[in-house]
Image 1 (cartoon, helix red, strand yellow):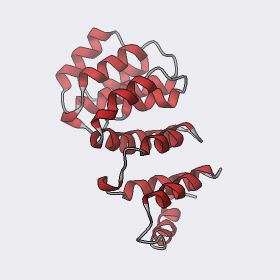
Image 2: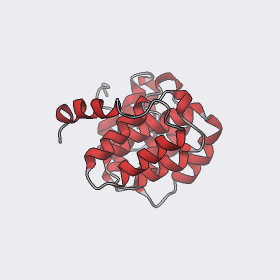
Image 3: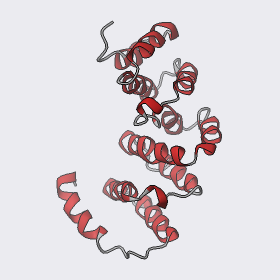
Image 4: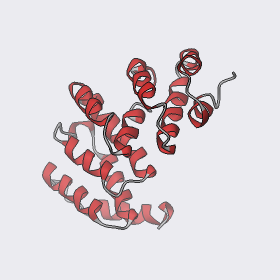
Length: 189
């Protein structure tokens, strides 16, 4: 089901969710939606999370987030969750950042590694470029398409804020191929 068809149905359904839903009820609902095979339920879950105010996010949401990223994983859901939910989570709970990133950056799960690369996409000038560079240097030899694409995408987004540093890093780091093309896409060489 395409979004134009799903959106009005979803909006109507969201209005039936009790206003006094507890945090546990909300997380149970997300978990239940995510366990369904059809992707549309996953999109509904992500749109529901997107409606949450920052005050509704809890430090314990990390386990839910990791579950969502590692089950029924595909680029569209991972990208939405990483750049929105994980990005917001790590801004709200900055003391969790090193623990999460250090655990996920070496994970066997490619989607967790990709999430480390793209969680700062919306951070703009608040991007920790030192952290991003370290993650990229660790990942630059990874042959996985989705990792290379994430490297380029994260640099391209940060280049909107700091093009000079991104261009210098691309040339100094030796990243190649897809990652380099994506990073320099809108920068003159």
